[in-house]
Length: 109
Image (cartoon, rainbow, N blue to C red; front, side, top):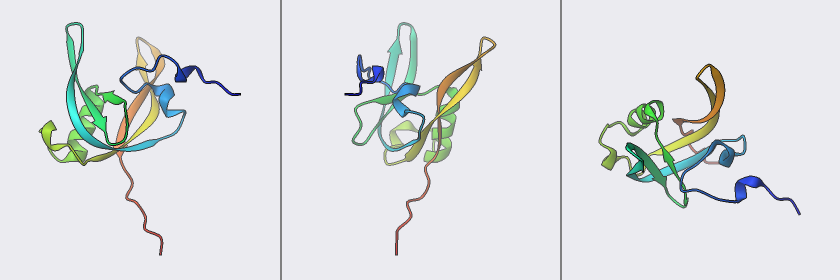
């Protein structure tokens, strides 16, 4: 039986390991405030998914672009793709989640 450490102690928000090296295309259904002590950030939640994604500035700007509006209450229905990436933080490359445009679904003929 195979076991994965990411299966245990599941949090409320996506971590890079949750993507298992691949991409996930999801549809936004709501945006909420995520509080971490004195820090407050937006978090998007998705259709048919328990976890949300806390947005950093880069991912928030991409969501604004993809939704076509900075008004977060109008983001519902916007499809985005989450993918693993790396970013420089304190001089080291660290894993992160990035947001990009979801590819159009192709209808087979």
